[in-house]
Each structure stands twice: as structure tokens, then as C-alpha cells.
Picture 1 (tube, rainbow, N blue to C red):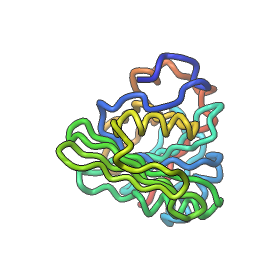
Picture 2: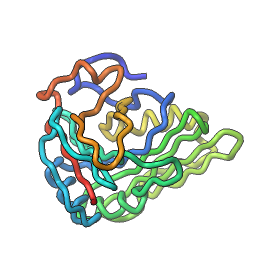
Picture 3: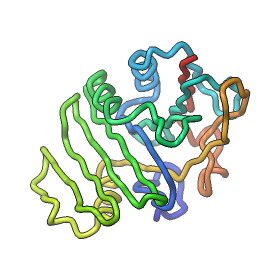
Length: 208
């Protein structure tokens, strides 16, 4: 859905044909990684790990910010389906710490759903959830839109991400287990040609 263009220009959702669970925070990566580490009581925080070997811990997160983008992205690694540790609660927490906007985005082509929960300064701002064969759920505290006004949850979500200056890449990572040592960075169809300078930074946060 996103045209191939320079990393600074990319906005919107790159693909809905993927399973994703992302936490996005409108703040610099240094602040987000620090607050995530504190909130999750992490004992590992590795800065600037782009293509640098790191050891995978029991609970693992990759944290990265693209150059020219105001949002930092957090993804959990090495979790089993149905055992995702982070989620909406982390969006609330991280929007409170720096008093900014944060959202939790989820999408699955396998199960046919898409949704997001957005918070501003720790307070609810907006949510959408749509799953095939189910009614669309939508609530907002900052604009006059009702669920019945939305003809396509996918187009609406894509437009919302663009409006918020967000780029959600189609990123994937190696299958890893605790104790593995790997070179870690976001990979994907439009990410493999990126270089270190396309990122503000890539960090790793882990809990043993």
C-alpha cells in the first residue's frame, strides 16, 4: 500500500497481508527505550544494535525509529501465538511517561482483523477494532465520527496512520530462542535495502 520512496517520505501502513502487533510512541527513541525499560523492569538495554550481535533474552523487544519520523516503534520478539506480553497497557503507560501520544496497533491477515488503541497523555483518545463477520467497534474522544460512518476499517485505519504521521513497515525478524546470538535489525520487502543512516537508532530491550 505504501509506494517505494525514501524512508523520510513513507507514511501509512505498508501491508495488511501480515500479522503484526506494534507499539508506537510519538517521542525520540532514547526516551521511549528508557521508559519501556523502566516500565517492564528490563535488565538489558542495548543501544544502537543495528546489525550488531546481541543475545536474546526470555522477553525481548526491538525498538527503532526511522530517520525523519517522529514516532518510535516497539515490537516484541520470540513470543508464542497467544502469549504476547505487551499491548494496550503499555500504550497507556508510555503515553503517560513523556506525556505524549502512543498507540497499540494490531493486524492479522490470518484471522482477518485490524485495530488500534490510541492514548494521549495517559488518557483514552480513540480505538477501532474490526474482524471479519463482526460489527466494527469505534470510539473517539477527539473527533465526531461514529462507527456507522466508516465504510472500510482498513481504509480508515490507513488514513488515520497517515494523519498521525505514522509509517508501519512490513517488518519481520528471525525465529529466535533464548540464548541465541544474532545480528538484529528490521527486515522486509522494502527494508532490506536500508542502511544504518536510514534509522535514528535501533535498540534492544530484554528481560532475563
